[in-house]
Image (cartoon, rainbow, N blue to C red; front, side):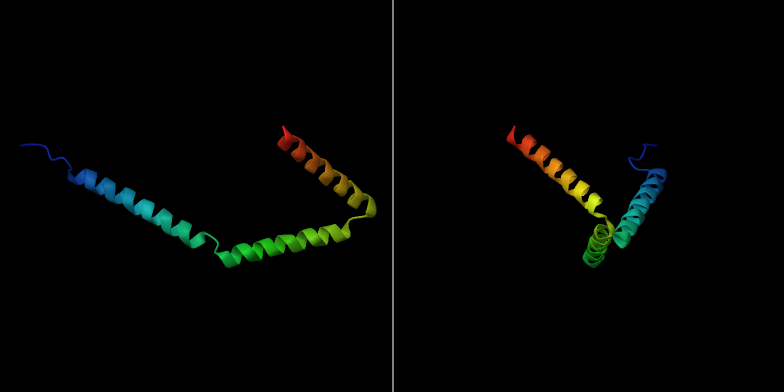
Length: 81
């Protein structure tokens, strides 16, 4: 009796693999945030950062400004190479 190229066990295994991949894809699509959710998240983060900046003391604001300037100087130095 000649062997079949695809037997019933292989078909069952292929069905499980395809089903599992389809399930994972469905979960990924359903849980991926839409454009509205992304914009809401960004706006919320911007509001949080703005609130944190309002709370900072003058010394902390000065230190943050110096750190930001130093970072930009490093970027400029890296780009000029």
